[in-house]
Image (cartoon, rainbow, N blue to C red):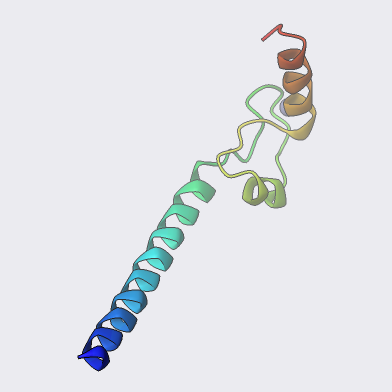
Length: 76
Ligand SMILES: [Zn+2]
């Protein structure tokens, strides 16, 4: 019985990995699509590396850091 249980467990783990990988691919594709290629604040183009590094990014690095500083000071 242990054999069958082990096999079932392995099969289950494989399927879970497959499902997770598929979900990750879908999510990555969605997030990459949702990233803005231009800053919503100043219109500067956002490098693809930043779009991928910050999924769903809407602002360029300048505007983002300015926003973060404002938030730190409680202005935003
Ligand atoms: Zn900007």
